[in-house]
Structures are given as C-alpha cells and as structure tokens.
Image (cartoon, rainbow, N blue to C red; front, side):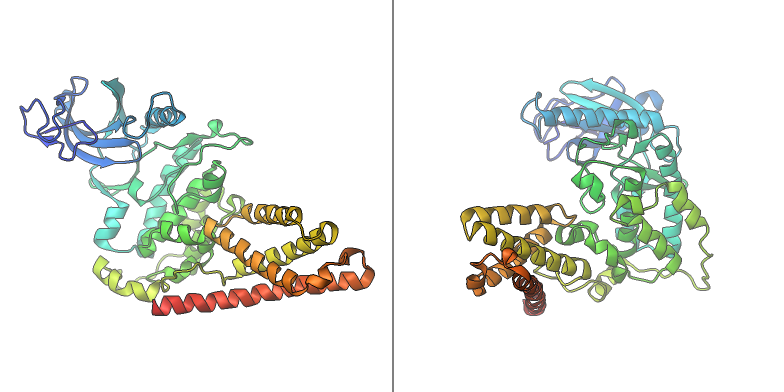
Amino acid sequence: MVCCLNPNCENPQNPDGTNYCLSCGTQLVSLLRNRYRITAPLGRGGFARTYVAEDIDKLNERCVVKQLVLSEFYLSHGTKAHQKATELFEREAKRLQELGEHLQIPNLYAYFKEGEYLYLVQQFIEGQNLLQELKQHGVFDESKIRSFLNDLLSVLIAIHQQEIIHRDIKPENIIRRQIDHKLVLIDFGVSKQKAEISNTALGTIIGSLGYAPIEQMQLGKVFPSSDLYSLGITCFHLLTNISPSNFWLKQGYSWTSSWRQYLIQPISQELELILDKLLQENHQQRYQSAQAVLRDLNNLPKLKQTLPATFISPSQLLEAQPLQQPTTRYLPQLFNSKLFSGAIITSSGSSFLAIALTSFLGTTWISSGLWLLVLGGLVFIQSRSIMEKSYLIVIAIIANLLIILTFQNLLSNNLLQSGIKGLLLVVLLVTLAGLLTVILLGVWEIINKLTSKYF
C-alpha cells in the first residue's frame, strides 16, 4: 500500500503502483527522501500528522514519520503561530537526538524538508499507549500503579538530568512496549530545556487541559515538579478512568484536594500520601525531583496480596461509575471549604471598599467603576477556573447591592469619619455582607441539588 501525504485526504491508502491518490487526486510519493515508504496513517495532533513507514535501507524496518502541517492551521508563513509550530517541531527532533540513547525514549532517525512539509522520522514502538490499555483492561490497581511509577520515574530522572521538561505527560504519550512491557515516553513536541525558561518573563502557555499544572497554564513556567504534577494526574486517570479535563473545566485546580472520593478500589494510605504530594497546586509544595518520589515509592511497605488482583473490565466500570462519581451538576459546586471562605472574604472585603468609596465619593459612576475594577482584580488573580471567578464576582455584587439599597440612608453619611459609632456601623455592615454571602451560597447549593435531581 502507498499512503497519500495530503493531510486533508479522507482515504489516504492506495494500492501499490498508483501514481495519484484515488481519493483526493494528489500525486503520490512512493519514497520519502528515496528511503521511507509511507504505508498507513497513524495519528494526528494539533499541527502534525504521523504515519507508519518502512525504511528500505534497513530491510523494510518499520518507523514512524511525523509530518508538520502548517498550511492547514495557519494563514501565512510569516505569522508567529507558524514560526512557533516550526520551532516546536524542530525542538522535538533535537530532544529525541539528545535523549534517544535512553532505552525508553524513541530514537531519532532523520529530520528533513521535502516539498512543502517538514518531516521527522523516529523509532516505531510496538505496543499500546496507556489510554488504550485503560479502555481495554480497565482501571489500574495499586500494584500496577506502583509498577507504572517505578518504571516511568526512571525515565523522568534521565530527562530532568538533561534539564529537559516534557510538559505533556499523559496516558496517550506513554506506550507499553510489547516486546518487554517497558513504558516508553513519547511526544517531545512541547518539551523545553530549563536553560530556555525565563525566571521573569512569561513563557509560552501550552499543555493538555487537566494534566498541566497551574504554573504552566497560567504563567508558561515549568519546573521538574511540573512534570511530576502531570504524573500524579496520570495516576489518577489510570486509577479511576475519569478524564481530569472534565474536572478542570468545571472546578479549575480545586478538585485535586478531594481526588480520593473518585477511586474505584482502595489503595494504601502510604500511596495516597505520595499522590497527594504530587498533586499539590503550589509547585513548591510538590516533590521537587523524580528521585525523591522514587525514594518514597521504594520505602512503601510491600503489598499483602493473597488473592489474585481484582480485574475490573471497562463494562463493569461503566456499571459501577454512577456509584463512584458525584451526580452531574448543571451549576458549579460553590459549597466547598476553599471557595466558601473565598466567597465570604471577597464579599466582606468588597463591602468595606464600597462603604469607603461611597463615603468619600458618594454613589457615583466613578465610585462604582472603581469598586468593580478593584473587585475584578482581586478575584481574577486567584488560582480558580473562569467559571468560579465569575460566580464569586456575581455573589459579591448581589451581597453589596442588598447592603447599599437597604442602608442607603446610613451610607449617605461619611461613616469612616463619624467616630466610634460610625466605625461600629461599618463593622456591622461588613459582617452583614458576609452573612448574606452565606445565605446566597446556601440558596445556590439548594438550587444546584434540585436541578441535579430533577433535570
């Protein structure tokens, strides 16, 4: 078979001897660089296509050809997006060249341009990625998670020693090699060398939603502990078969403090503590090196297992899932400790600001605008999802409107310059704003439960 290299071709495979693609009419290339015969499409990413190929100079040994497809995604060759995609593609080739001696990282065979495309040729890894394995065999138990961590941590130790941060660790980028069952880390397309990372300027914000840590997604900064966060999230996915991107879109990073409730089967407390430290939102509170994680992993007590490990098939998992996952919420869950306290602080603090502005400037468009500007700034610097931030602002606005409309006559006086009596009134109004927030959150939770139950 000859494979069409037009990235938009819907049916790229053609019989041998064909000169033009039977599906799209593109002229077929029998051999790339007079050496690589493309036989079948393998996958597609944000700006690249991958194919299975045969290297005729190596007795038709199979390899992977990755094709950079710029014209499909970017309007012109002069754009920053075009330049960034080319830079990432070239960087992946360099990383594979630097790290290819490691037995659990694919070797780079070639990097070249032919026609309008850039190509990267790398070692073909026979086996399934861990997302495929998860779908076929079901969730991992503790024994498999320990084995997974032990195997992959050795790879991370090697790449971090070269001062390279992978930046995209997830089940799809980890293949269990068929010949020896070792884990192979692939896709270094967004990896970055530590020397390239600025400590002051914002870096490129890139990564997979749900897997990438907060410093990577919000600031474009990464550290070895950033890869370790992604490793912890990958463990969660393998233990539960729940994609972390679903939680990230609804709750930002706050859900990682309650990850245990989604477990399909129990794990030891010692392993829970390791995962807890991997999943810390603040990168300084996580493990700072893969060696430290491996050391704690090796110190875990041996598993006492007298019966064969429980096998949970994907069909059984789907049946059990409603018992493990919380009821789908149409509205975001605001009634949790972190967000609850944040809402009270935001409403109380903003009410004090509103009283101060009203006292000195009066109820004017200027004071209202300043109040909204400061409130928005205080909320949006917090490490929460956009939805959570929006609802914090809405709750603060409602609470303060109720205070201002109810006590409009009192606020017409300058309370901050009315002595002790005025200051006491300010304290009472700020406290009342906090109480109103509690009531609003309670009403919100009741509405949330009703909509989840009946709709």
